[in-house]
Image: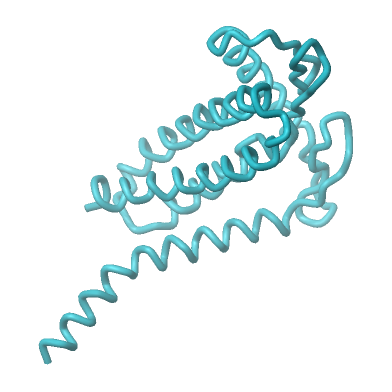
Length: 188
């Protein structure tokens, strides 16, 4: 009987992680299958929900804001000599460029985070401040992430894809850590 109690205790400890993974995967695939990529000036998704709604203007505005903040950070804090034209940051006297496109916006990660906290058990009153704070932190971390990729790209120009891929996994790890903080410190 004691072994069964221990097994049930272990299962209840994993229940939250399983719930997190289910919400994460559901939101990931919902996002992935909801957008059809079109190509405009920014290479942004133009169609949402299978040709029902054109949301390019939202992504255009988000990418423009993100690009200007990345440029400011790279130029003023990292002290890099860069030039920005629309959503492209040019390095090394305009011989290399990093283009910031819709998938760099962090909107998907914000959507995933929002859904994880919104649909996860917990006090609604705490969700009202935790979700906006988390969204703001995700935005700031995305600006730092893209700026860091640009800084690393200038030093190691042949490793852009590696830095870009690794940073995506770090981004999702950070979202997981936000959930852990929610689960361990706020919700309980």
